[in-house]
Image (cartoon, rainbow, N blue to C red; front, top):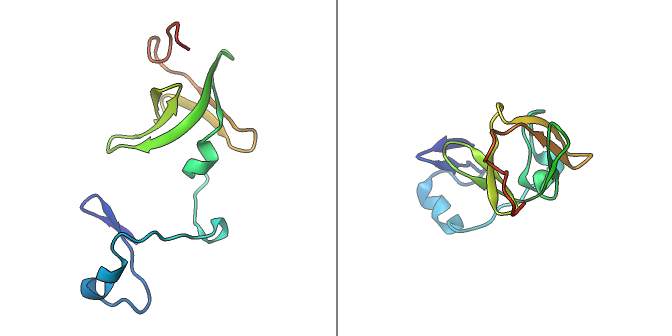
Length: 114
């Protein structure tokens, strides 16, 4: 597997070229969690969805509704607002405790709707 032109290219045994791969276009591929090679600082979307997002001072902003993937960074969607998943903002991710601690600039998530 490798990235090419903004897409993942995946090779399969018995599928030697692009012509043979045409029959799989639009298909959905699955792997068990045990088959995935996820580094300690990488997370699956399913691990993050539902995590409580809190500030370093303990203020709770809500739960991760979904994760969106953009070229600049992945985004946690919390109460309809985007939190960039960049090291400068994310202080801790504990998927077992379903908790993410963030330190974001004032105004990113602060308003009366939260």
